[in-house]
Image (cartoon, rainbow, N blue to C red; front, top):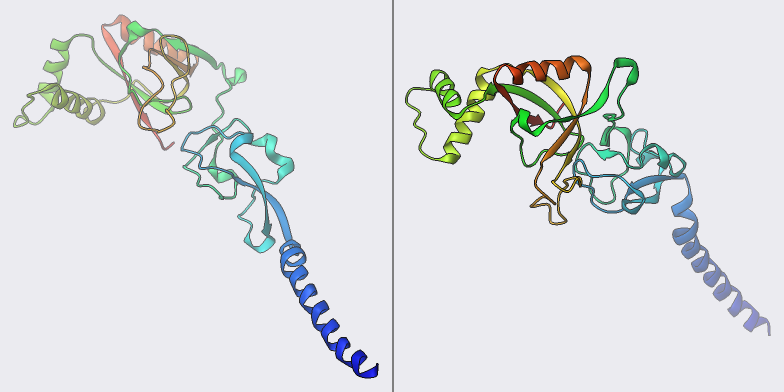
Length: 244
């Protein structure tokens, strides 16, 4: 009996040791010195909306937490805001990744949302999206005047043979030789003819519609500037930029 007892004691100790190591590695250790943070549950594209479907909660070692990563109880602070860069799945969400550019007009500054009449616009980039920041240029309101203006500013050796080259040359003329009429204009909405917001399709290679309506965060002063230019025979050429 004693021999059996002596035989089973080491086996029992080994079994308990193995069980303890297993429990420690799988249950205890992962929870030691950890904290729950919000991470991207899926890839979130640049300017993509952050919502409950593309967020998840993950336990992370405290020494691996990035800066002021958002905690689960702070999710309301980032819901329905836009990503400031492309956020890959599994990335911790922290303030620097959020496009905190507020599109709610500041009434104390006289701001309001204003549509830009189609007849004021000469060209709007098809890739312009809500929450982008744009510069507005004033250009002559006739093809003849535009070409004449371009010929005065472009290199004499630069020939314009087709529509693509004309557009490229126009971009060069507009951005390279003129000052914007308005800078850093906040685009609050871009909609198609059916008044639906134009966004990227799932494959991100095309848009959900053709832009026909543009709304901006405006003030009385900025609208007067645009109206005065159009009344003087100019139209608005929109150029957006990612960086602010």
